[in-house]
View (cartoon, rainbow, N blue to C red):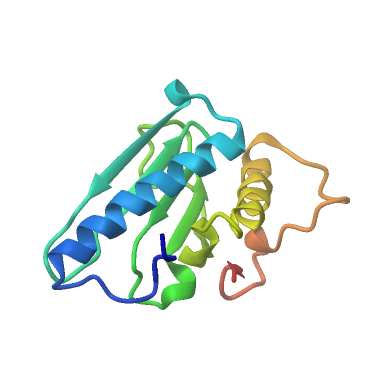
Amino acid sequence: MPKFNWNESVSFKPAEKKEFHRLAKRQLKKLADDMGWSKGEYDLRSNMGGIAVSGEITLHHEDLYIQASQCMMGSDRGLMIRTCEGRKDYGGGRNHFASLTKLDDGNRADLVKYCKQIREQKVGFNADLVEDRGYNPHTSTPPVLR
């Protein structure tokens, strides 16, 4: 199967949009597995949105909220990751971003590491050992995992 081009717009293309959602859900499920989460520990949902947008696919854990979409701010921000206080928290903590290409099988290890680092911000970590660029109040924009 050829690699999906996450960066090619699916707006106004119903068949491509359906495939985008199918593949993003599959890859987010793999991410959940890689994070060590069992099926009952997270929700995986899809909102197709209107014809002019990609819609979004959301992996929602008790501690992390990960959403895939074709973002208007650029393809390197197609994954939005933030901490949350349970699966009913839709606002969550500060936004962090990663490229949609990080969903691909060969890139997902980087995404797992990034998600675990973001999760540590909620559950606690040794700030002397782990630099947390995402929560630096002096940084004007959040970091992006490219």
